[in-house]
Image 1 (cartoon, one colour):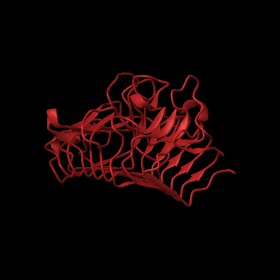
Image 2 (image 1 turned 90 degrees about the vertical axis):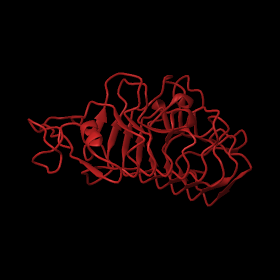
Image 3 (image 1 turned 135 degrees about the vertical axis):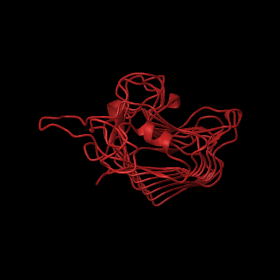
Image 4 (image 1 turned 30 degrees about the vertical axis):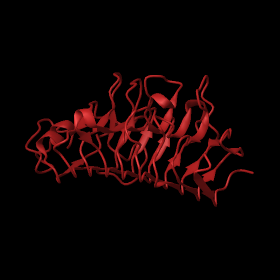
Length: 285
């Protein structure tokens, strides 16, 4: 994909690249790889030129790989998807085993969030086995701009199991990683490792909100992440680094926190039930 070409082609070479990400995904099949170039920026640019579209990976495209041509998970280094308005996630994954890497998601004035991993029995969608890494997330939020429970940068809808979220950068998102409220089975084997959550406290309600529905299932691992100042979004509903209410089990370990605070069933820095073990974490105190 190269959005700067004058005319799109069959997508089988850079000279004949598709102009939009969705066109390339639609032309692809399960197991294929879609590469996305960053749009060109002018000398005085203060924000990347974006792909202004909503992308859907359908149920038929299992193991699709969607990869940005990038050198770092930072704004300006990754191809960015940005919708200026709307209530739909910028990327919706409905197929199993998909790999999303080196892309940027800027929520701007939209309220649908960044990426939604959708696993809904009634719609025969299942995004289990997804991997999201090396991406940059900014300004992502759900329907309520003060409550991470309504959405954020990465949203788990239903019970997408065996998901890995690693080496991403989160900045100014109302919600970082969010388990949306659902009556379905809880997602198990959720791995969140080596991510960086930014310091813009006034823009953040909760970095990792897994309270939705019945909470996460067994196999939860949150390790090696860094968190900046304590979220302090005005009128925020949660204003904590993490809320793991309802977790069936798991490990919270080797994380670095920039603010001193309390952790536990009613912690002001993080709600962590006794089912989740905590070890080798460091905060400012």
